[in-house]
Length: 586
Image 1 (cartoon, one colour):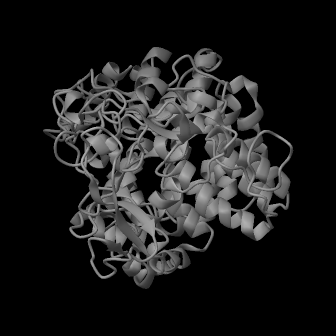
Image 2 (tube, one colour):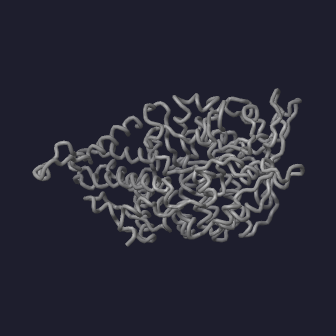
Image 3 (spheres, helix red, strand yellow):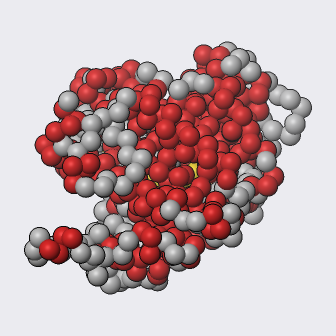
């Protein structure tokens, strides 16, 4: 499939290239152009154009995981004492519409919409015989799914949801300059598209890379959750969780080690992945946004030798500490490891932490073919943790071993998992008063990670925290423990959107700015592994160096003071759109 994408993208660009040399030529059919009537002569051709829609989804700027880390409470721009400059405007809440990534994301999403509209228009022009073919219906549903998805992403990201609604291909240059549409109208529009996809896509597709009804249901549930229409959201989320036709299930037991690894591509928990490859089109430029390789491993892996990453975005202090300090379930045998003297001991860090991030005291997780991360890297320079989910730590000893360059990785990007549906459903249950149901959904996830369950014991063979949760305390736990620890940097700007829709973004940054963390020394147990000084994140004030900025850490202080709901809840309209589309100012 990936090899075909480039060919058909080129064909589409050729279709749009028309050269006029005289007035007479304007009255003649350009022999180098291909009209929709000719191009859509069969469903194989329309399917090829549909492939170009999927190709547009490879664009890194649609996902912006680095920006999501910096803009939310999940990440930091590299070193606390020598920060990555590109990340600081996002982290410190000083971004504006002139930042190029604001435009890049906007343009990438409208490219998806443009291509989806091409497919829709072509399919609509077919005759009744083709329209009666099941393949026609599925292709139309896929195209409308991505048109709806792109509008949903734009609506939930830019200008309080008031964006440009594009339901057709512009017929002439004047139609490119189009005014803004009210947010509620845009919302109604993309829900209709997503509902059409939900009703007409199969439960599973032969190609796992293709959209299906379960993915459409998840997105519909998310749109209603975002507008606090919990009862409607629960219908779709219940379908995702319980409809066996989709084939989804949470990975449990030893299977959890498959999450975010090459061996776990398209596992039973996966709902949507960007299917990358380091075997095709490696001659493409590193910054070709429709190449099949990805730069995310390079951006998030440890910098320098031997791993050859850059660590542009790393986990924040509170997130690293929260991952590391989850209470283990003493009844789960997975939590016991060899103590080196013939017995067993509890793991240093929980399974969820070990799967999501690399930290100095994780002594039992292989990392880039080393027995533990602390035998490879020092965790110094105030960079004490790294995200794992984008990297190739499970299959190579260095990102440079992947292809021609560490910039060209074939690692899949997991966008949506079944765990997301469970936690959205738990939120709906909390907000509608069913706390027992919410705890059941949350504990399903916690127990698969071997961490202590919430609430009073139900008699099962698990440890429980014994807390009698209220709506407020359970809501707080879901918001600031369960969702960020389970779903950090998945989906589309999920954490940023969550903090905004809950109305807690500024307060969250203020709360985090009031927290104190320091870096303690750590002595690894591995043979010939040196001490890792200033490497172990610890809450509180350093007993030895409370004023040393390489030891004592404060985060989000500028964000806490600078965050302005009117300026920072949404991205502004890009400066390029404001300058070149006068209609948006009317």
